[in-house]
Length: 137
Image: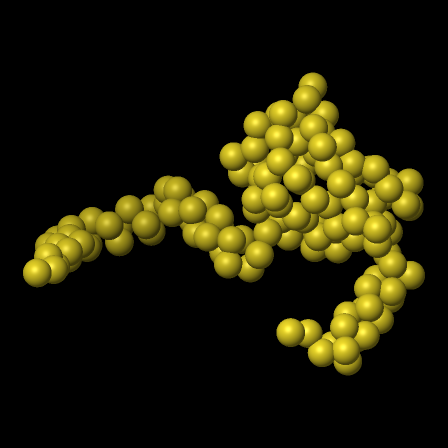
């Protein structure tokens, strides 16, 4: 249960964000370029690949036909996916939670091919490689 004080603090923070930052005034999926396009109250539009955002990774174009903008203009809701995006985080370049973003960065790092990584893999191989998984009884 959220206390009245916490609720009031959240409302104050939202009011400050609305006062000092842009809000979403339009949102659509552009099938031609495969991008979500968000129009801001500042007159700027931002666009990104939906598959780069948490909750939209497996979205099909039909799933993105309906996008609801929250009354504050700070949130986007995708009812067919039951997914939400927070505009201030998007504007800071965060397309998901910290945990989700860390996992995505880890995937990218795992794909890296460098001389140092190759040398470390060879050295690990000389030591017997990756330890075998223990079977549970």
